[in-house]
Length: 85
Image (cartoon, rainbow, N blue to C red; front, side, top):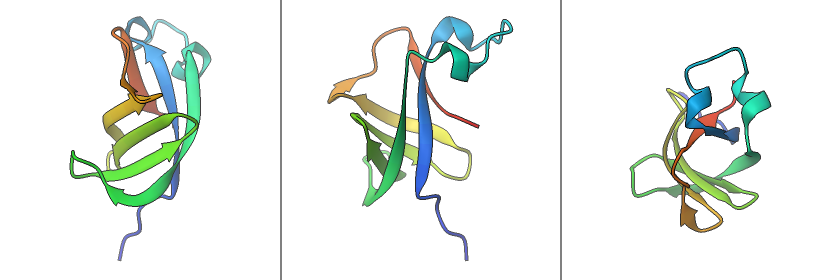
């Protein structure tokens, strides 16, 4: 039996950092939040996590953010949401 993680750390990172360039995503994040499992499933079909103004549907197997809202709005253009390693 597998259990889903109860919390993740989400990083909001400018897209230009995605390619590497020497700076880590954690150092380049414009915002971060620890999100905890809500027990709900999001519209994407993945478990929903929430905390500190961020609501995210995360695939716990691949640690991929499938959907995200920041302070109730879609993610600003030019930003990506990542799960911290």
